Image (cartoon, rainbow, N blue to C red; front, top):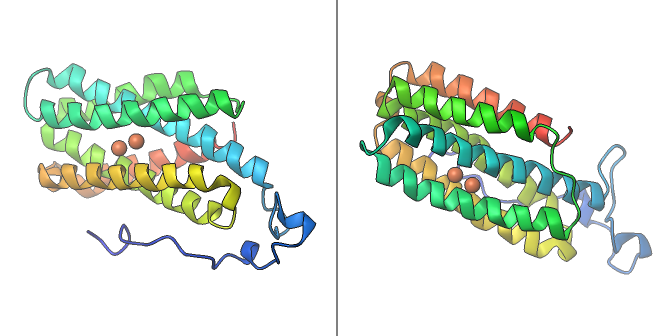
Length: 209
Ligand SMILES: [Fe+2]
Ligand SMILES: [Fe+2]
């Protein structure tokens, strides 16, 4: 595992955790720096973007399976797809329970996710695995940012734990991609660089639109 992906959540280092718990303002929103989101805004963003990300992941693996059919590594991709469907079900439930508006870009991710999965699978099985490495890396890094942002907010410990659990599974998917020859895909560095940049753009857009 690279040093980057081994990055651990920081415990209690955020300036947001400095204020005394006795302070009335700390109940909902520990010390905020100017321009930082409120806790409600943070939770809204976390749920909206993770819901979109998990939906995109489902569509990517569905796109790969549509092209690869029963060819290897179909069982491996199906296993990851099952995880993504479970992740999506959790965020579907949170969207409803917490009354969060889904991103307006869901129809775009429906098409773009499937297209990305199908296109990489058309290049070959190893390119499909390179796609997995790139996407899962972007997602797990994003989960880690959320885990750190939620750390001072004890009321949201359950949401943070969900992010911790799912991040662990995304890391597993990344390792699966590497174990199945991702790095032997043609143009691996350029391919993963482009897909990861696109994934990060999708994350940025989904948390705002
Ligand atoms: Fe996931
Ligand atoms: Fe994943």
